[in-house]
View (cartoon, each protein chain N blue to C red):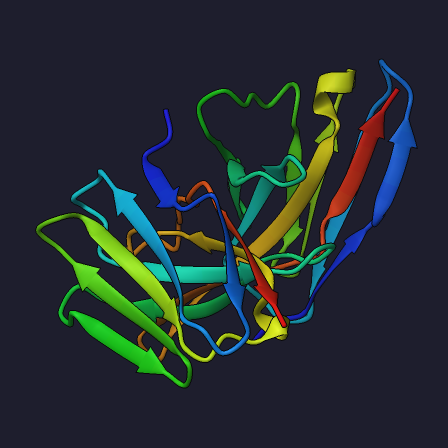
Length: 112
Length: 116
């Protein structure tokens, strides 16, 4: 049973636009909420992460928004670029034990 | 950060044989993880391997099918035993690092396995 669901499954955005990916989880014990980015033929790499003590975190063009009551968090990519085309995974977990639960994934394509 | 090397990068194997995948890290780490990923799909955790102890397997994965070794703090192997076409997948190792307010997993590039 998949505990972490992402939407949409795939997303096409024009260059310069805003890409938004959502993640819904069930386990209320999760206290760490990262997003990973994966390019074809590569392993995932950490993009940005948030702890539950804040509702939003921004790093460059990437922003995480966290809604604890709704058990959801989202990734916003501003000024999307063709180099952002990749598969994105949310991977919430327990900060204390390094174990993560990967979401279903979202394939993002940025078109010129 | 950590640099992870996986070998082989890909292989084609016959049904009923076994393949051992190696994972080498450029620094000492406590926890290593093994995942399976179908192309275009999510990552499923197979097991967690701590040095000096038996690996902990997730539901649906057993040691007889996926034996893991962790002889030291920089190396681990995953064996896929008695393979069938259903084992065709990408196998990834990762290491966990906690520090500076972050909990990061660094991944190898994966081993793409095809079973005929």
